[in-house]
Length: 146
Length: 129
Image (cartoon, rainbow over all chains, first blue to last red; front, side):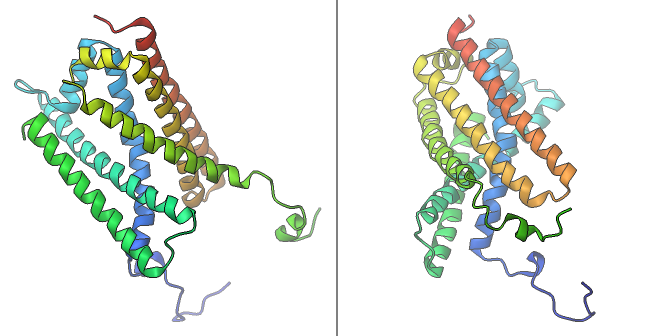
């Protein structure tokens, strides 16, 4: 098929005006990917550190949670990297759960009216944002002393 | 040689009879993930502290090891189904798609096996001193 120059094209994703309904769909996939990779690999590391004994767990804590006083440069960098990972995974978890619950409702055939659909898409984002902020504040104040 | 169009070749054959399986498994594992992750968070929150000894003692109990293993199976199964859809939607090159699906299979089976073995070993042999 040849396209005549200057003819209007179908709207592509790049120039489409974003709506919450579109955003929540792609966020569901992106957050699922983050949970599947960063989330699960960290969970597996944590489990094997528990199973590996006190020394193994101390090493996990030094690199992932907090190296405390006398931290090497690598450990400090790793701590901050994993704090970002933790934030991303926490947000991904809540976002994926909220948007997943929305999907389950849609799957039983409810919530397709335009306004309702939009409202719940926005609600899922808001809920995920506040839940993440709450967890981040609690963790920062209780565990890592930031 | 068959000179019919693709649609002509499959018309009248009926469905492949397993079209709904993937979809329903994705939803079933979504619900079990929700239940099991809620259990994990709740179970962790009621622990007095997060020392290795406390966690090892916690994880070696049957009432923790079993749901943990179930959670690993449920989540990795859900990942298998979900990332398969991502790959099918966004990877268009056939050989790349084949490789990506193969890697996904290795990742989920390997990850689940590693996690289950870790939990089972701790539960069966007891927490190391």
